[in-house]
Length: 280
Image 1 (cartoon, helix red, strand yellow):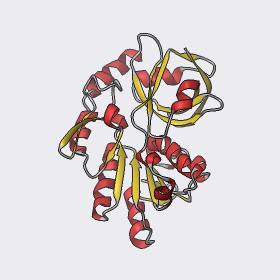
Image 2 (cartoon, one colour):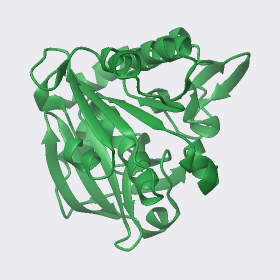
Image 3 (cartoon, helix red, strand yellow):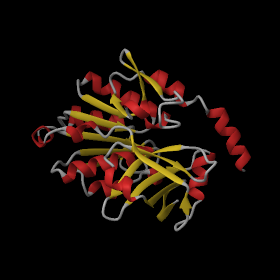
Image 4 (cartoon, rainbow, N blue to C red):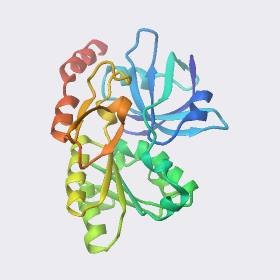
């Protein structure tokens, strides 16, 4: 059993929890994820690690209420317990393997769409602790869905916010903001990391390909069991077939077959709707 040390509502139907899991906190790196079960018969849910504190022994998870299982997790209160948390799983972000010399020779831009701010945050934080201040774009449909802006400002060189409706920051899509930085502000980037809705990552990758900028995306949203056994997260990366949970979750955005990934993402929509109805 794993205790929920803290819990707070950070946006509409989005909750942030610190869970006591010292062994996971000690071993975690940016880009990795955990598998969570609320109870013994519960569904296995892959969740990207948002933060980890090796001294406190806590792992931070951000959960949005979307389906029946995420609703059950978010109904848990501070001080209560979840049955299982397994990890860290998946491969860490590629840049943590670089030498200090290689790291300091690169200029990074992170693009976080919606809930993507949660997995982007530990990457930006890790780079900052190694002396690198990346630029960050945070995008959402409207102002009250912007998350982790203040936290990101603590570790980034610049944080640019965008909203579809113009209620906060730059009015437009994250790709519009990215184009403005590259084309009009003459910003130079060696690598762009995009995490968020699948359709957002697709269009970010299409745009960066024109500028010949290396682009990394995270396909964590299509994972199901987190072990590669179910095959639900199978994706085409160039000419190869990969499994997001064991080969990723991060891949070269210019090689991802996003149309296939989008189809896979909608595979279990009807089952999820049925499960939601049973919970009501």
